[in-house]
Length: 416
Image 1 (cartoon, helix red, strand yellow):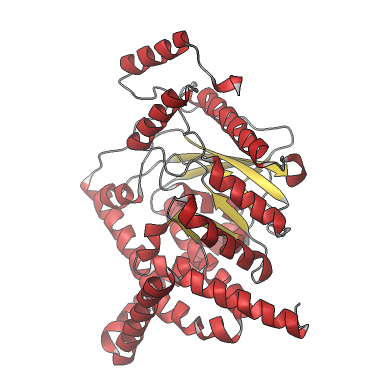
Image 2: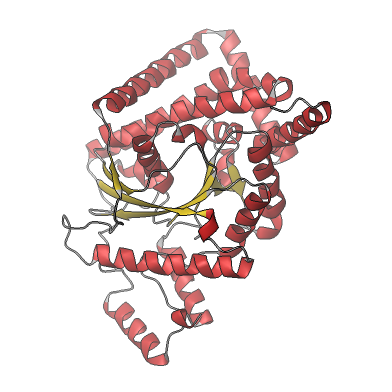
């Protein structure tokens, strides 16, 4: 623990540096705050397209699948995993073709055939969107096997929130007392009813916005530990709980330590993406694969392991941002791979984008000309909003029914 403790002299130097730099991290690229009118039109168009495709997809794709929740829970899970993964190709692909983002992905391959945990520093609220591009470059199947831990409020987004609930994403209130039972139920569901998944976690708990950075600085001063410039201090309680539960379920083979960095500019949120129509143009990922046997078992030791990992991540990012723009490279390890799109995967990506855009316009047409479509929309809204009120989310009903089905199948000796 001494590694994190600062002397009074070091704390004085920290305050002096913060005052001189205006409380800003000098090495990072600037935050994007302005754009042209054409950029703003592009951003609004992207936002509308995503909302409409998610809204109509929930009506015409997700809703017809719902009887399987009760009839065949395992079939439902596998079908929806693939449908949502198919949709994720569109927003992630448009980041490249509409916004011109370049992705550099290095490190170890994430294996979709082994359950695992993915942990990543949370620099912006768009990190999960950018990460879909990294997964697609490694293996398109990863878009169907990734689950994400998200802020609970996101489940209430019309269309997109409903689809994420149907996909059994883990929505948390960021309160361990409220979240622990929900975490356990969903992890049991993944392990016993679902397929093989990799759960994406942001141990910092929130993105590194100015407000969160200030809170992290106050926390560091209160605890007399180092204040980080490029990451936030990780919250170890939730991570240790999830890891312990996944070990109990024998459902974790690897932990993937992912570092994200930006070379040319930082856009803080999805709201800014839609409002400004600009984003980071050069996004870097590096992935390190850690066998679960190399991770401590004791909760206290796991917490210390995670803190040390974040200290290393801070130093890696410090080195990255100390170099001039255009010369920055995330350090990686010997034998690391580089992942890029092949002509075949690029064609696959473009084809899926075209299919989803075509379907969205088709569904929109039928929505306005067909009374049946309007009835389907009303039914869908009532269904998802009702389940949010009654069960705190569709994912909780789905997991509850799935676990009950599994017990019944086990009693009958019919488990696969």
